[in-house]
Length: 252
Image 1: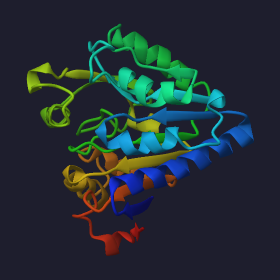
Image 2 (image 1 turned 90 degrees about the vertical axis):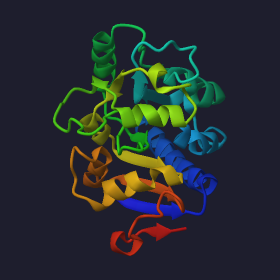
Image 3 (image 1 turned 180 degrees about the vertical axis):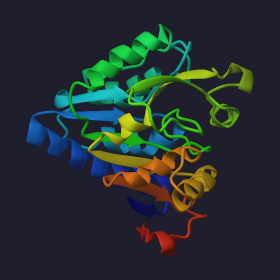
Image 4 (image 1 turned 180 degrees about the horizontal axis):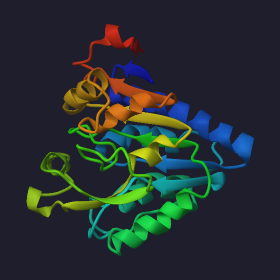
């Protein structure tokens, strides 16, 4: 795992987008297409903005999979991750081959159908973030590190749900769904390359917990350290609690 620290979230997003662009173009050059996994949430704003305006990507040859979605939330709701991806990635790029998780349907059937589609061929690159409780996708602690299923239905813990209120997606805690469809930890780790984008001071404790403690389901994103193709992008605020010398972090 490589950790890179930037002065602010805009620099972070631009640098992560450069790596993502290279990975997508490389996959298209080598195999004729790129299969990607896209993350959502406030932490991904700057990264996705930079990625969608970067020239040179043939988005017609990109296939996108979706990390997670709330159960029971309509696509018209401001917090819908389907709505988020349509507005911030799919429409700006003209991407046509995508698989969104329909949380309004039957969650188990959605898990099975999209799971079969993502399992049909290797994934080239996954874009992920880290939650305030250390979650990876919606795999809250203690995360399931063992299941081989690509997608599962999970219960969201209170810390995770409060984060969504804090980010402004919901008015109060009672409005936040208690269940979600989530890509599993093992499925994320099957990606050839992982770009983890984690800005902001509110993520500093989770970053320290996941990267300085043991790899454990109690610290879900700690599993990223077991993947040799992971690059973590931090800013000054999110890296503020890390022991940078011990982790041999590259500051930019």
